Length: 266
Ligand code: 13P
Image (cartoon, rainbow, N blue to C red; front, side, top):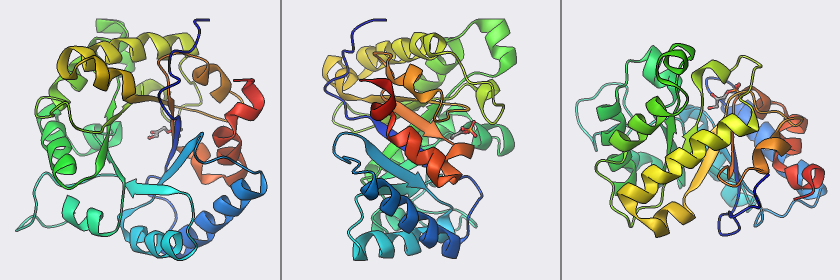
């Protein structure tokens, strides 16, 4: 194991709810999650926690977080590349900003495979997010077929290069490496596999946005993360957190992931 060189980066544990929990369930869930973590004396300044509910929940989550001053961040699962206009079904970054979202997921593999989003659309959405003061969490990752054909990092590296094409080095961004074969499969990448790709992604950040941005940008791992395997990922020098799907819908499991420092001896 290499000594951690990520002291400058606050770990981020992000829960992608996907199409789960309506707005009433979201209120109960967020309230319980916050209580649970407060009870456990979680230090939110040492590990940041964010949730990504469906669009229809965001106003309720905003109201709760602001009324109860909860130390949780939240964001949307997608954003339009457009600001406004005749784009039926799309959601503008301006609207998300109004709801005090800090983050937005962009280019999740389910958007890419089920909704045909390509790298150029992802790049346009990244630009739109930054324009509206949202921090894009840029998702990249290879399929099992890509892995066999091109090796571990070629596809995520190419995806990130295109996604960053319109980004200046003043922008605040997060990168999430999610191998498609590890999502929802119960078969997570090994920490070594995640580190290998994360290191390559950090090189892309260095080449395109410079040393400083590369040093401060958080790179998350996603794909079958659970309380029992988070420790291994967080020990890797280039992995700065996790993007969690299924396990983010279970308060105890998600809290255990958030509190990884308690069980990894970091
Ligand atoms: P799982 O944690 O369910 O594998 O999902 C990962 C994911 O897609 C998070 O965005």
